[in-house]
Amino acid sequence: MVDEVITSFLDEVEKGNFKYGERLPSQENLAKYFDVSRIVLREALSRLSASGMITFKQGKGTYLHKVELTGLMPKEFSRMFFGNVDNIYSIIEARKIIEKETSRLAATRKTTEDLQEIKSTIDQMQHVKEEPITYAKWDLEFHLAVAKASQNIVLQQILHVIKESYWTEMLKVFGLPDTISTTSEDHQQIYEAIKAGNGEKASRLMEFHLSYSENIASEMNKKEK
Image 1 (cartoon, rainbow, N blue to C red):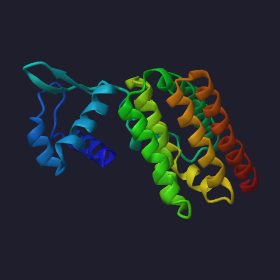
Image 2 (cartoon, rainbow, N blue to C red):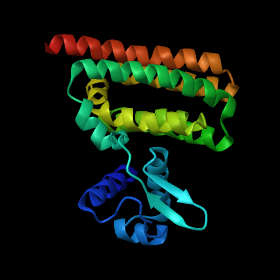
Image 3 (spheres, helix red, strand yellow):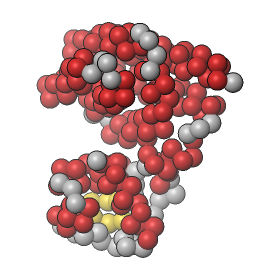
């Protein structure tokens, strides 16, 4: 839902309905405009703020800024990079670099709420092991929850971008036999390491987990050539 609001917002900017340098409508009015809850809207604005596209000024409101890297939004990033095998490998490589660090940071910075959120995604995956598409969605939520627990907003936003571009590749991977059972065990071990506060172990387990997916994706692309 948040991604849909961001996409709609960008469309409105392109149409000229929101103008650069000007103050945006109040959050209450924006929520009504996009027909979403205030919670969803705030998350969308948070991501836009992280990209530098909007700024919050105390007592003055929210302002729209023109930035060159609006490609940081998931939809635009996907248009740029998805579909090129070389770029897919670059995306996987980027995930490994980023998520090794988010896992390490999460182990020392997580809150009780963060742990509950990570555990919840694992529980959801356990309930949908026979449904690859739904499982893949919760797998993504697991990785985003770990990133959130790192308390690093920049790494969180980068991962939001990457996960959109890698979605189709993930569906291929989870459609293969044994992939879900293997990754399910990985998730639990990563969670336990984060819960125990062992950053190095969490980072190492995440690297192993993503390397498994990388190897499968590589073999699949070789067969498709």
